[in-house]
Length: 123
Ligand code: HEM
Image 1 (cartoon, rainbow, N blue to C red):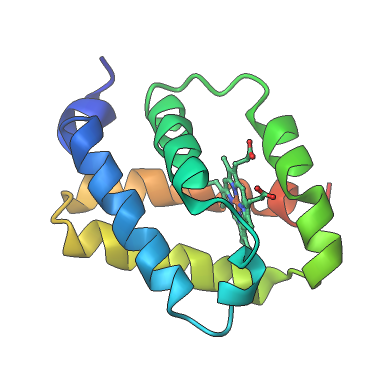
Image 2: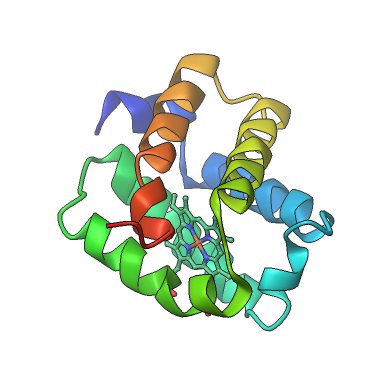
């Protein structure tokens, strides 16, 4: 098991973070319109799986996957760096509120931030 996964604890702790993360995003009018037609339960499950893979460093194909996953919505909603920063702030707050240790949080946030050009389709 990776050190990071050990620190975060278990999938239950990660699920708590993801639930809080989307609660924050869905109550923020600067970004919640992007999620209005999305099956949120399915997205939360995918996100728990995705962050677990990031923690395990099972990242092969990640960049391509993230790019494809966002291609349509980036075009549809004109998603830009400001939306990306709002999402990262929400993730940071969720980690803090769920009492995830700061070092593990920083590491995961760094991994999420590194996906920016792929999410936004800049590569
Ligand atoms: C501006 C920032 C972002 C916005 C607005 C955004 C929005 C969305 C939305 C609306 C979906 C659902 C697409 C659909 O079901 O039609 C989605 C899927 C997803 N997003 Fe993001 N996202 C952003 C950044 C990120 C980042 C940084 C990550 C990774 C750390 C990420 C990982 C994923 C994953 C794994 C999925 C599931 C893809 C699938 O359906 O298989 N997203 N995102």
